[in-house]
Length: 471
Image (cartoon, rainbow, N blue to C red; front, side):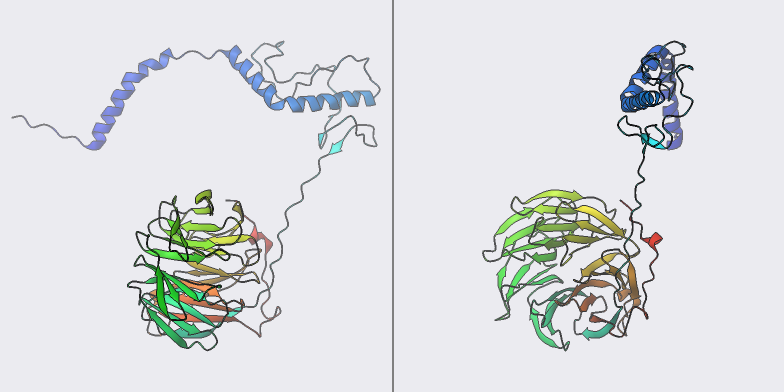
C-alpha cells in the first residue's frame, strides 16, 4: 500500500490560499469602472452638505464688505462663494462639480476673514469692515491640592491566626471588629487596642463585616457562602441569609432602610430584608466575581464593582442595572463612597477613578499606585488612601488626585515579605485614625503626625503631572 505524503500545516494553508487566489483573481477584471462624472457629483454634494453654513457666512461677509466699501448693489448680485476647495470633474465651466469658484474680477483684494471665525452684517469694527473676533477658550486651570498632614504608624494589634480580611468600625466609635482567615470575628477596643470579644460560627474565611447604626446587630459574610446577623446583646447568631451559591466577598448596610446588600463569587449581588431574611432582589448582570458593593441613601443606592472590570449602578426599587461603567481595563476590587460629596471612587490595577453620582459621570484618573489595589478608604477631610497587594499604601488628595504620601507597610517580625498585602482599611468615625487589615495577621492603626506643618512637609505640586486624562 502506497504511503500518503504528509505536509506541514503551513504548506497546506499556503496551497489553500493559492487556490482561493487563482479562483477569484479572474473576477478582478470584471469590476465596473469608476464613472468620473458621478464621482465628482457625489463629492460636490457631500461638500455642499458639509460646508453650506460656511458658504452662507462667507457670502454675507463678502456682501457686507462690498457695502462698506461703497460698491453697494451696483456690482450686481454676489455669487455664492465657492472657492475654498476645488473638486472638479475635469471640465472648466462645470459649477455643480466643484466646491467653489470665484471670478478673478470678483476676487477681493483683501481676505474678508482675517483671524475671525464669523463676520456678521450687524457688527462693525472701527475700520468699517465687519470682524467678530474668535474668543479664545480659556485653558482649564488645575486647582492646587489641599495640604494634609502625613500619616504615621501608631499601633500594631496582633491576635488573629490568619490573614485579616475585613474591618468594621462601630457607629459610636468605641470599638471595631475584624474578620480573618482563622474563621473568627474579633472585637477590639479602639482606644486601647485590647481584645474584647471573639465570635466563632463561620466555617471558612470571614470576608465582610458591617455594624448597624440603628440596631445592636453585626453582619458578617464569608467564603462558606453564609451571611450571618449577630445580636451583640447576646453575642449570638440570630439570622442566616441563605441564597448565595458561592463565597460571599462583600456586604453593605443601607443607611436609611433596613436592608442588607451582599455580593460574591457567584457574579451576583443580593438585596435582603434585614428582619424577614427575604431575598428581595438578585442583581444579575456581572460576568465575574462581584468583589465590592456599597450602599447610599440617594440614587443610585447600590453600586457594585466586579472582576469583569465593570461597575454597575442599580435601581433599588426595580432591581435592575441603570448604568454600566466600562472605563476600567482590569478587575475592580474596591469601591468607596465619599462621606460628604456625591461621588465615589473605584480601584483597579490600571487606575483609581473618581465618578460623580447619580449617572456615574467620570471625573478623573488617579494614577501612580502600580499594584493590585485591594482596598480604599476616604475621610471627610478629603484624604483618600489606597492599599495594595504588595503592602504599599498611597495617600491622595481627593479633589486633585495629588499623591502627598506613600510608603511600604512594615511587616510583622517573623513574617515573610510576601505577607505584606493590605486586604482592608477604613477610617474611624472621626476620620482621624486609619485601621488596616493585613496579610501578616496584624491590624495596624495609623494617625496623622501632629508635629508636621506645611513648612516641614510642603506640597510638592507640579501642575503638569496632574493633567486629567479622559478615558
